[in-house]
Image 1 (cartoon, rainbow, N blue to C red):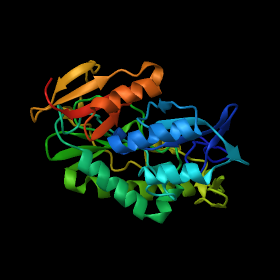
Image 2 (cartoon, one colour; image 1 turned 60 degrees about the horizontal axis):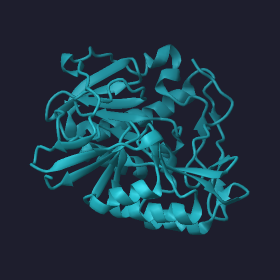
Image 3 (cartoon, rainbow, N blue to C red; image 1 turned 120 degrees about the vertical axis):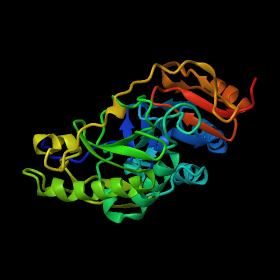
Image 4 (tube, helix red, strand yellow; image 1 turned 90 degrees about the horizontal axis):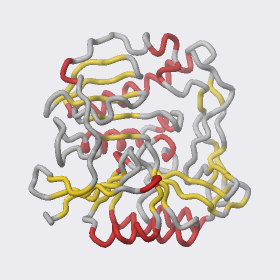
Length: 314
């Protein structure tokens, strides 16, 4: 079992990481989905407050860096800009909204559309005050049955086995029961709540006081964090936590080929364009090209690229 004497230090808008070039913040996107209008606002915000670029992460999130700060606090104007862009829906839970979803789910391939389940899970997560105490590294991964996220390390997750059901995943090693997609968000929330209880009771798992969440000009205590950040860090890699053990469903033994760049047909007759973002650095010039022909939504992928879905066929 892993033991630590500190909370994690993953950055957020209200808890930036202070680097040599200034403050760094991370914006968490459910399944990488980003309204195009929010991206447009974010490009302007980076030009005004950061280095002008948007930095894509391997968890399908976006980072801004080189922000001015005062004693570790970013400016109120920056926080307001992010809030107005719709990218800070919950100041109390911003650090724990780590939810990855197969990027093309519901549009092409896969067995099920997991976007509704991800949105419902995020809603329930933000409604539970205790779940703000999860580590900012705690990750939920939802694979729609194509296997594109099957090899990702995770704390909790699921893989679709048909259009209406999915098998739960618990840590890197264990599988739960097969349940209906309508029940999936609540099942994952129940597991996350139980993890908070189990990690505190685990040997060496006493609660620690996390960093103070910093806001624009004010500070306040974040929920108590624990040195056990992940399910895999529980005794025996979470074997007891994952009880009762279930065999891995044969339908989950799938993998996906790398996603090609360019136009990809959707099941509804529209198309998605997969855009390469070299080194995950979305520069102002590339952002302008993307915004010029994007539809209403953009999807950041775990491969640090962009999907422009719902386009009319070229």
